[in-house]
Length: 181
Image 1: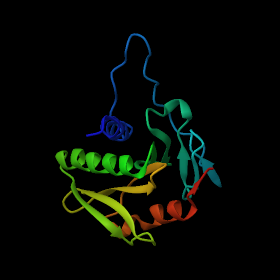
Image 2 (image 1 turned 90 degrees about the vertical axis):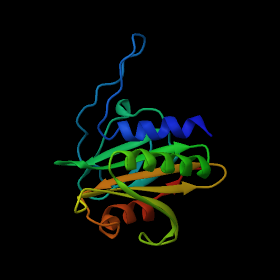
Image 3 (image 1 turned 120 degrees about the vertical axis):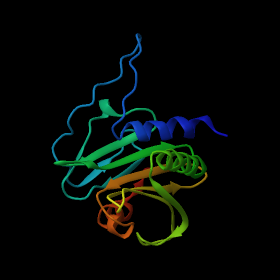
Image 4 (image 1 turned 60 degrees about the horizontal axis):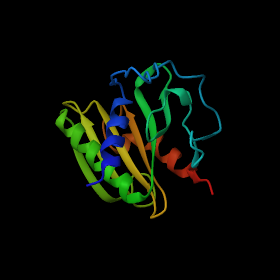
């Protein structure tokens, strides 16, 4: 079992609202409000990829990113609608992180399903979809990207009541995704 996916999934989950303890040597950055809404193409903090966010999303500053999280954004006036990109060494590590995160989400009351050939967003993709609430009140979708040389985990949380309802946020991001050389 890989340690990195365990740490990464925890970071992706804590970035969604949880906190971490401060150490005496290096204090944890204070979470601040996101910047103005993003327009056009944005690049991940590590420079590994670029993408376009849907209208109304604002980026968090690089000082607010932890661990494998290389991009974080939220929809203005809707802090429960968020986008995160986690960077991994390869697709397998990103998949491990998605499965671990889904296990954690399921432990919090979410219902998660793993789909290796999902076509909700166009081309077949590995997607882990977690629904919360009765009836479903929001979805957290994990989309695995990459190959044997690089990997990423796109995490999107929306107020959608179905996986298909997440299409308006997830599909444009995936369609605009570009790996940097």
